[in-house]
Structures are given as structure tokens and as C-alpha cells.
Image (tube, rainbow, N blue to C red; front, side, top):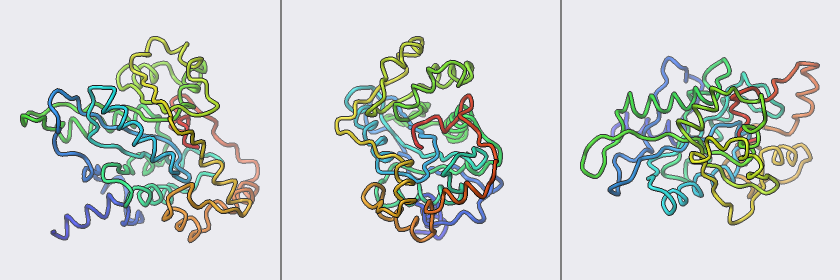
Amino acid sequence: MSTTESSDILLDAGLNTTETMTLDNYRFPTQRLKKSLSKPGKQPLVLVSCGSFSPPTNLHLRMFEEAADYCEFETDFEVVGGFFSPVGDAYKKAGLASAEHRIKMTRIAVEDSSSWIGVDPWEPLHKEYLPTVKVLDHFDHELNEVMGGIEDVNGKKVRIHVALLAGADLIQTMSTPGLWASEDLSRILGHYGAFILERSGTDIDDALVSLQQYRENIRVIPQLIQNDVSSTKIRLFRKRGKSIRYYIPDKVVDYIYEHGLYSDDEKKQADKGKEKEITDAPGSSNAVTTS
């Protein structure tokens, strides 16, 4: 393996640092994408999960696996890749670790546990806030305009479909009047579509009533084993000095302890005085259930 190939793998797998990473030297991470379709008659699909991931949990990882199984058995899609896209620092939310930490933690989370889930730092490298629709447009551009799509079983290039992957809370926010821009909803749900994992305590049916025009593009994945682990609960455990191991990947736990993350969130928030936090804006990536 050449030095260049080795560094590419390290960059994608999570072993590289972000100190020198900027939008100027950004490269779309293609290392974990399939090079071609493996089955005839399938439509290639890339799943994109947007959110805080502060920190990433095992449930975030399970969303990708659940969606891949659903696609294989219930649809004509073939999943050729999946990506975490952490929100940038401009989205000021309580408990949000720096983009650098969150990029590293999501990379560490997938480094050894997955061969097909990657992390794209494009969104968090931006200083300004980016709505979800722009993030999906970015993936569509990189995958289909820059890469030119993917080869089917006959060697012909075909377009890759991009879809949003999220928890059930997302649909609730999208069904709330005025929370998301109507043009953003039209493109996200009408053009890209969404794969939504059920979550205990969330009534998806009620939320879908006001989104009936997009119902065919919203695929609800049943959660056969209930899991309500959330980043919010992990941060709360840390503040209370409780163990967080086995709720999130072991190496992410080690990273959190090493860097002292989340143990003093309350103090940090108090030190900020009366700085007003941004609430869930229309098209907010953090409307996704990745709190």
C-alpha cells in the first residue's frame, strides 16, 4: 500500500487529526463507498445522518444497520455507503462539544465497528450554519456530479440516490408548522426522501398526518429491540459522574474521559452568561434526533 493510500484510509477511518483540515484542503471521503453495485436491478443508495453527535452513541450506529437491513429486504435500494455529517459550531446548543471533537468521535465510532459507514467533515468545517437541505445537496453533488455515480453490474454508470437517515423525532419537528422552511421540506422529503427509525415515546402516525404529500418518500423502519439511549442522557450521566460505558463505543468513551468532555457542561453554560442559544431553526440539522 502506498503512503498516499494509507493516509487516505487513516483520514476516513478516524485516525487523522483535524487541526490542519480546512475547506480549502477538504476532500470528499470515498474510501468506504462501494465501487459498484453487487445486484442487478437495484438502485444505489447513500444514507446521510445529520445531527449533533455530541457524543455519538450505539443507537446512532444501529440506525445505519437497521436501515441497511430494511433496504435489503423491503426495497429495491442497495446501500452503497453511509455517512455521519456532524453539525457545525455555529449551531449553538447546550452540550455541543466542538466540531473538532465531534468529527473525531464519530470517526472513532466507525473506525473498527464498520466497513461502510464514514464521516464527512464538510458541514462542520463551515463557520456558518448550514441547513440540512444544503448538506444533502452537497452529497448529491459529490456523488453524482464529481464522482459520476456508481457502476451497475454491467459496468454502466448510474446515479446514486441520497436519502436522509434519522430518528422519529425528526418527523415530529417536520410536522410542526413554521419550524422548517416549506421549500426545504419539499426538497428534502419530495426529492431525497427519508428513512426514519421508530423511537419509543414518539408517535410517528400523528406526525405523518400533516406530511401526507411526502408519505411515499418517508420510510419508517420498525425498531424491533427498543433502545432509547440518547446523547442528552450520556451528557447527563457524565455531569453526575456516572459511568457511560457500553452505551457508546468503548473508544469514544476513552476519548471523552481523556479530553474531559461533558463533565462540566453546567459550569461552561453558566460561564457563557446570558448568551442566547439558537433554537431549532427551519431546516435545522439538529432537528434530527441526535441530541
